[in-house]
Amino acid sequence: MDRDLIERARAGDQEAFADLVHQTSDTLFGIARRILRDPELAEDVLQNALVTIWRKLPHLREADRFEGWAFRILVNACYAEAPRNRRWASTIREIPDRADLADDIRTIHDRDELERAFRRLPLDQRAVFVLHHHVGLPLVAVAETLGIPDGTARSRLHYATRALRVAFDEGRAPTQLRKEQPA
Amino acid sequence: MTDDREFRRATTDWLEAGSDRTPPHAVDAVLLAVRSTRQERPLPVPWRPVPMQNIARVAVATAAVVAVAFAWLNFGPSNTGVGSPAGPTATVVASPTPTPIPIPTGSSTLGSPLVSGARYITTDPFPIRMSFVAPAGWTGNIGGPYAVLLSPQDAASPLGFELSPQPFKDPCKWDLGTMSPVPTTTDAIIAALSSQPGVVATAPASTTIGGRQAIKVTLAGPDRTDTCTDGHFSYWQLPLGLTEEVGQGMTATLYFVDNGDQPLVIVTDSMDAIRTPNLAETIQQVLDSIQFDQGG
Image (cartoon, rainbow over all chains, first blue to last red; front, side, top):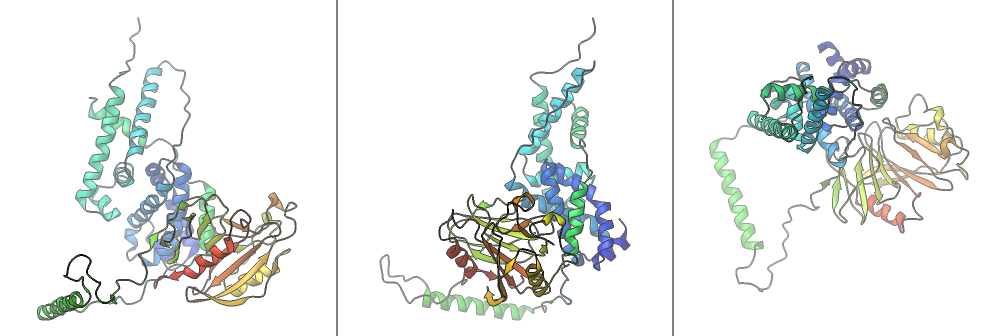
C-alpha cells in the first residue's frame, strides 16, 4: 500500500483517497462478498465502509496499519448490515455437457454443501475464516485486525472449519459419486 | 470421511469462486459522497489521568464506601418487612433518561420495528449520535452514513435525519442532475431550494431541536407531478443515492439543525398523512423527544 497516498488522504486530499479506493475496493468487496454471500449486500456494505474509512482516516495513527484498520471497518459494517438481510440468493448453474460430467456434478454438489454450511455460521466465524483462508492473514493478524484475543480467533476458525468439514463429509457420504470405468 | 487434501481443494475452489471486481457505479457513488463528507479530526491532546498513589486509592475507596452506606441508610429499602410504608422518596436517580437502544442499520428504506416508548439512538455509520422516543407501531433504519429513516409500519418514511443533501437543478426534471457546486451551509441550501423551479418555500423561521438552534422551512409541491420524470418531484438526493420528494399537493417541512460546518436536516413530510392518523402530532412528539449525545 502506498504510504504517501494514505498520508495525503488522511490530510483530506480527495484525489488521493480516490486512488486509494481504486487500489483497495476489489479486495474489500471480495472480503464482504465472501462473508455475506450476497454481492448486492456486499456492495452496500462496501460503500458504507469506504465512506466511514474516509471520515475516520484522520484517526489512523500509522499509515502502515491502514489495511488491517480498513478490514476491521469493513467487517464491522458486515456485522451491522447482515442481520436485516437474511435472504438466500439462489443461483442457477449450467451443468456442462462433457465426458467428465461426474466430476463437475460433484464439484457443484460440494460447493452447495459448503455454501449451505457457511451460511449457517455466525458472522464472526465467517469473518475469521475469510480473513485467514481468502486474504491469507495469519491467525495472530486476524485477531489483531478484528480486535479479539488470539484464542478467540483460533476457536472461531476451528468451529467454522469443523462445520464445513462435517457438511462436506455428509454431502459425500450417502451418494458417493464415482466415475464409471469404461466397458 | 474424505481426506484432508480433498476437503481443502473443494473449500478453496468454493471460496475463490466468483468475481471480486467492484461494480464501477459503487465506486462512483462513494467518490461522489466523499466530496461532501467531512473527515473527523481527532482531539489535539488526549487527557491523561494522573497516576494515583496507593494512599489516595484507599482514601477514594473509603469515601465511596461511606457514600454508598449513607445512601443505603437514607434511601435504601426499609427493613420493617413486606408491606411496610415506603421510606422517603428516593432522590438518587441513576440516569435521567433510559439507556438508548441502537437503531438497526439496513440497505433499504424498510425499517425494523421499534418498541413503543423506548428511547433509541443513532449509531454508525450515521456520524451524529442523537436519540428519540419511538412512537407506537413505528420502524427505524440507519440507511447509511447520510440518512436515518423513521416511519409507521408499511408507510413511506415521513421522518428522516439527513446529511449532505445535494439539491437537484430542477425537481421536476431531476434527471438533469444536481446543482454544482453543492451548497453546504444552511443558508446556501435554503437559497438553493428556494431557487428550484416549481418549489414554493416559506420564509425561514428560527426554532430549537434537542436544545440546538434550528431553521424551519416548509416546501410545497406542485399541483401536478405526473408530467415530471417518472412522476416524481424530487428536491434533493443524498450522496449514496437516496432522494427526497414532495408529493402532488403535499408539503415537506425541513429543520436545519446547527451541526458545525454542515447542518443536520430533519425532513418531515405529509405524504402518508391520509393513511396514518395523527401523523403530524406523532412527528412533533418525536421531534420534541430528540436529544443529542454530547459527542454528537
